[in-house]
Length: 82
Image (cartoon, rainbow, N blue to C red; front, top):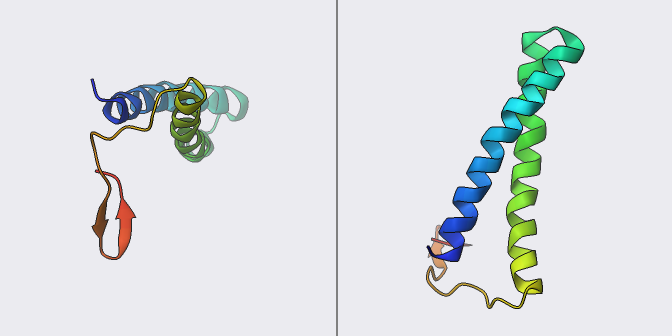
């Protein structure tokens, strides 16, 4: 599996687990569905983005070259990976 696709799938898997854990812990501590939902969405979202870049950085530390299977494209004046 191409490395970027694998990293994204792994990140989504991690995000799903993290959302569930964050919501459960927040609900157990507050007893409020509204507060638990807010915490359960905001905190894991920030962590998920950080995790993706963390994985990419460790791939470089391990000596793997950057993936060339999805060259970046210019969209609306912004450089984005496909």
